[in-house]
Amino acid sequence: TKKLYDELEKLLEQNADKEAVQKKLDELSKKEDALEKELERTLEMFKELKFDQKLDKLKNDLKDLSEKQKDLAEKTNQEKAPNEELQKEQEKLNQEFKKLEEDMKDLKGLNDDLKDKKELPKEEDAQKSIEEKQQKSSEDLKNNNNKKAAKSQKEAGDQMKKMSDDLGKMQEKEEQEE
Image 1 (tube, helix red, strand yellow):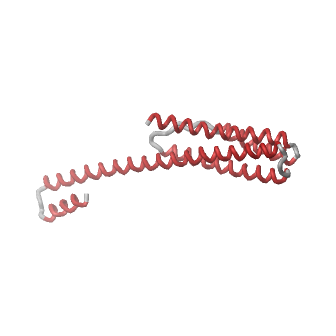
Image 2 (cartoon, one colour):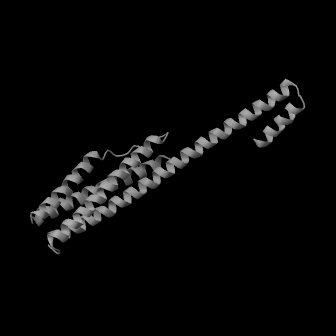
Image 3 (cartoon, helix red, strand yellow):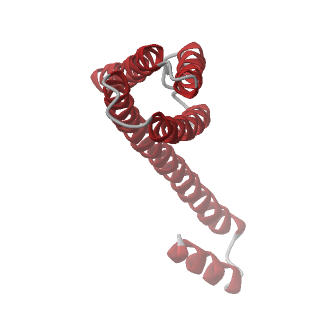
């Protein structure tokens, strides 16, 4: 493109005929169009890569949090620690899940930016249910009701695992379609 600009400049300096100048301008225009299309394709590939990385991280983080939640359910059920300590641990997991919900929103935003949008699983109900179960387990721990708390914790962990699995299935489906 730089070379074409230089050639165009020479033609203008030489007071070349209009046809030669027009020909160079057309050539330059075609090159710029091709470059713009290539940049758009590259940008789209970058967006897809960013989406895929975010999806992968979210899927793995949900799976890890699911395991932590189930471990806490086991600990709570067996009363292996004082309730105050179990409550703190549950609150920490509640915060981690809130962060993952933000990551899910970010993922949806990245998806909206893609030309070929991915079909993300509808997880709003599951997210709400997990939040409720986590909150219920916190309250049950405060009231020294460990069996109920453990049940809510296990259910929340199971739902997180299902969300992670759903994202994994969506990812596999997308890879098969490519």
